[in-house]
Image (cartoon, rainbow, N blue to C red; front, top):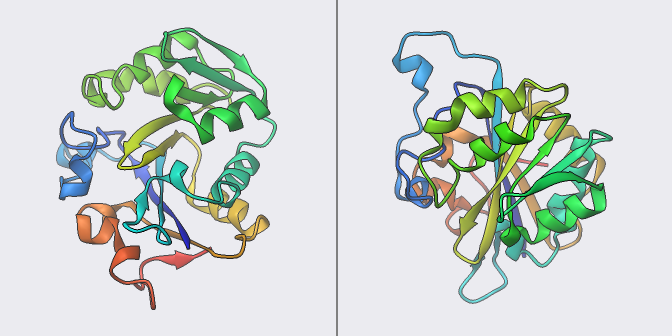
Length: 228
């Protein structure tokens, strides 16, 4: 059985995804507190989501959104959420440019050659600078000004691949709300047989036990994880 998890936080101050440069820090219980809250400032109207997955039919379970046997379970809703907004692809070689929805879908399924994807008419230099703060690079807080430039574009959103144990997860950042639109997109694309999908508050993913709740508490799932 495949399990898709969508952790959403909005509003968010766009602090670093993990508390240090290690992309697996969040799985060890690293804090994800709001930088703006710590500074006593009101949170800006940004949103983020973290899409993760586990193939529970494997022994041991395969962990990673791209490791799932049914990629349509998350890919179709994500493409529906993107709508007709233009896609930009930034490759590992630092080159980027416009791509079709089909090309973006291929990169979402297998992002090893991608540093980032973006929606909207985004400035490529800002996307490249924001991607430099992604997994494997400097901490993303050092590139938040560039990420905000990306999100300031009409319909702007940024998607970054995040390494998982057996593939990749995806982080999504947007200036628009994500919780409602993503739920609606998942509702329009019912889960294939053998797939369970959940939306949960990002704050509940801070520790390993809650991040991997599907391996500990699936029947029934935690009350804070809503099936979609």
